[in-house]
Length: 171
Image (tube, rainbow, N blue to C red; front, side):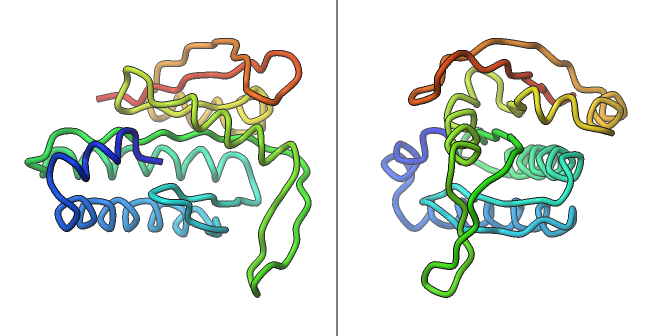
């Protein structure tokens, strides 16, 4: 999800903002497909995707940040901030309108984690502990020279606190 996209439309106009959003979709789509993910749906300027392996989801997130950095360097409209949240778990899979969609608490937590991301850092991803502790994830983050900070969040509609890891991409 792009942070402050409503303001972007206000500042640079619908056509220019939509052109940036389309470019942003291209970056995200490429990152997801390159890591064997599948796009479930788009919601405004956000994309919900699924992956078979947590490490693929994290790698896609890092690829998204890299693509966004390149977009921002080429843009004359200021930096876009991408809010990425990654969680894993069981979900209910259903077919609606001839498309697969997912429901349940896992999806709710993923959405809340994503909406909490994108604070002051432009290039960050929020991972739940379930993702962070998954095989290969820590090794991947070390390879990409990311800094990692842990935090505890109280997510709306979620009982108890959720430990997350803020992954801040290297410059």
